[in-house]
Image (cartoon, rainbow, N blue to C red):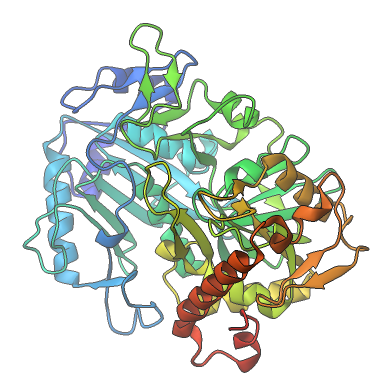
Amino acid sequence: MTTSDPKTLLERLGLTAQTLHRNLCPAKLYEHALLEKGTRRPCALSSEGALIAYSGAKTGRSPLDRRIVEKSGETDDVDWGKINIPFPEASFDKNLAIAKKFLSSRETLYVVDAFAGWRPDIRIKVRVVCARPYHALFMHDMLIRPTEAELQSFGEPDWTIFNAGQSPADPTVEGVGTATSIAIDLGRKSIVILGTEYAGCMKKGVFSVLNYLLPKKGILSMHCSANEGPTGDTALYFGLSGTGKTTLSADPDRALIGDDEHGWDDKGIFNIEGGCYAKTAGLSRKQEPEIWDAIRFGSVLENVVYDPQTHRVDYDDVSITENTRVAYPLESIKGSKIPALGSHPKNIFFLTCDAYGVLPPISLLSPEQAMYHFMSGYSAKVAGTEMGVKEPVATFSACFGAAFMIQHPRRYAELLREKMKRHKANVWLVNTGWAGGGVGQGKRMSLVHTRSLIRAALAGELDSVSYAQDPIFGLRIPSSCPNVPTEMLSPRNTWVDKAAYDHAALKLAKLFRDNFAQFRDPASEELQKAGPLV
């Protein structure tokens, strides 16, 4: 805890609350959270010692409600469109006024001072101001925690988050439109959150900011996980939600650098965060022991269901939301890498959950194919939750995280290609989805086989095998892999109905083509040819 005068800090923030708690330890935040009043659903203590908290009506991010202040000459390199929606400066002022009025009306406020970015010469200082102790504990876990000496000399932050999520936004404000608004002002270095108590909005707000700042310095910001092998080799794992990014990077034989947000500079890889934010739906000790064991004192369980008598959490119960989550400090993972830094990666994995059952379980990409698939960011999800639904829905998210990328996807792809070529990294496309047919006909890829494929790639065991080229997607497929049945490596071989496979493959190839049309001009001819042949 720092000794700064709370009254002075409140004045600097433009707030007038009665009490301000700055950088409380987790135990104190537990006390405050368990005594919190006025919430829709009170916090609780899990049988394993984690804080259970609820985010109210919003149980996930609100990407359509995110806005960025547009200011001529300052934001000309923002990729404006459906993701990065321009916001008038006057509207940001109104949102900030609403947030400050609400925060000033609270009896107690919380401030968290922390860092984003493990590289000392690159990191930014972040100050979070909020009214809920659960939000303070969440950001204490997710950002990099300063030492006591660093807190004493923290000074003014580079960025400030005003989280007034309990207060609705004003839909009549120009550019708002709903009761939820997450507004970013790149010039004033501030983020204002209204109308959502989902804690992930703070985390992704910081990531969005760094996705704007880092590429301007020639640093690639990445929505990926990273780990390090016994010999110091670093691997990256890109993927959308549900593809296995967190699960596959939490390997007991490799040190975890981070599970979600990283930067790649001239020195290597660095984690942006100080914690992990893992999905818990269906979590079991058998399947994911590292994550299971990380859920203990100091961690935050979000929107889970628990037994009122034993306080044991039922991870299979997703009646509140399928997006149940846990936040915990990075060091809660046994064998994690602290400081969270790594060398230049030798292997990069693009994880895709292909619900069409068309893509091979693993394939090696050329530099141009890597750029193509990085900009495509393909995965798929089942079109509904009822049993027997067969038609999958393709999802394309540029850079495997379009919702957080503020510059044009081509900028991130160019940085990836440059660094990949300079450091001679292999890029692999890994299908963690279906084989032998799509959803309803085929089977989900075995996690055991996927781990074997990735470990073989990491160990160099796929360097000396022969490769066959997929006739439609142009992917190079290895002929064999230790501990993996040879017949499953070529997806067409796993289908009983070969004509049905050809039809599904052609359908997916056309979806790739249609999606990539947005990047074709002025994309190079070489890059255009890296996609499927349709």
